[in-house]
Image 1: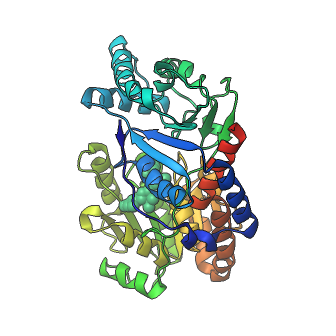
Image 2: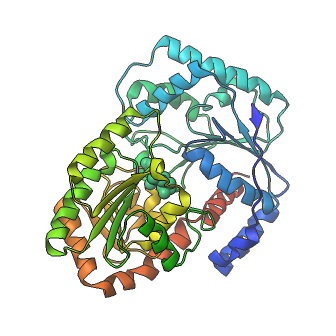
Amino acid sequence: MQLVTVGKKTFRDYLRFIDKEIEKELTFLIQKIKNKKIAMVNATSFGGGVAEKLHSIIPLMKDLGLNVDWWTIYGHEEFYKVTKKFHNSLQGQEGDLTYNDKEIFLKYNKINAAYMKEWNYDYIVIHDPQPAALIDLTERKENEKWIWRCHIDTSTPNPEYWNFLYKYILQYDALIFTMRDYVKEDSNFKNITFITPSIDPLSPKNIPMEKEEARAVTSAFGVDVNRPLISQVSRFDPWKDPLGVIDAYKIVKKEFPSVQLALIGSMASDDPEGWDYLYRTLRRAGEDYDIIIITNFNGISNLEVNAFQTASDIILQKSIREGFGLTVAEGLWKGIPVIGGNVGGIKLQIEDGISGYLVDTVEECAEKALTLLRNPLIAHEMKEAGREKVRKEFLVTKNILDYLRLFQKLS
Ligand code: UDP
């Protein structure tokens, strides 16, 4: 196992995002917990959503005076191949869990468990399936409370993988899932808490940006800043439905010819499916120069994502299936109305008709976009509702509070 070094953040900078009573509760909980030792354990400190979330939350916990360490487990290619299968299968992919896969999974959990002999923590938070069996392979000390934090959608898992993991998860003192829908109905867990992912309001992707500055950035990518802009920021993936977004845009375009569409996506060089889907999306867009499709290979990084979201009149996240959909919180936080697919975590974020719209079809998506384009006042009125919802429920500060409440409950 390896101890991860994290950057520095100051919680004081975040006080302006939280209500007085929440600040009081935080102060109370920190007093209760500051003498306890917390370990967070996951597979990697770089790449992937979990690592990004821990880099955002752990420096703030430390600044609050909490005694928290972040450990990543030791692994090799053979282990990561198996855990990738675990990840996909727990989200429903078909396939067998072989004897050899189980052996590899347990071999690395055993190696890592050996490091824990000298550990002395009060709370051990294990993230995702990779290190889930540690609880069974190390001698539990009396004061330890073990928590399993599941970041994935396990609502309809491949039964072979789920049954294998289930006997380990059952041993935990508490479990955290993103939302109720992700817990398989017949599970028999003692203590479940729901915690959604969150965004960091002071990260480069979310830090306030002036409209003028944002427009300057988008115009460098070919946007006409004097005309309305609809955008969707997401991977080129069938579940994110970029083809449906283009179809909806084409309907809108007929009635509102000045509209432009930006599809922003990040591409991994080793993800052939992503490239195939990007090419399909480009073909669907055809020769319409008011559709701008750009990726990290064109120079899109956090600041540009921030600029496109800030400069948009409407943000779409027209997913057909969605874990949480951080892009929704990012859009609402910037005060932009979001039209989202009526699925998964998007339903937790958009209040239909209040901060945006939840839609089931291409036609509905187009209709709601037209409503917003024709009535800028509606968009304006949605701004505060969206920001307020995110401030209360989906900022990193809320995430910290959720963890502390759970620790306190277990103590
Ligand atoms: N993102 C990005 N650049 C891109 C596309 C996406 O930085 O070109 C970010 C996006 O802003 C969000 C995250 O990647 O923070 C995607 O998270 P989400 O939960 O929306 O979807 P996921 O990709 O995890 O399914």
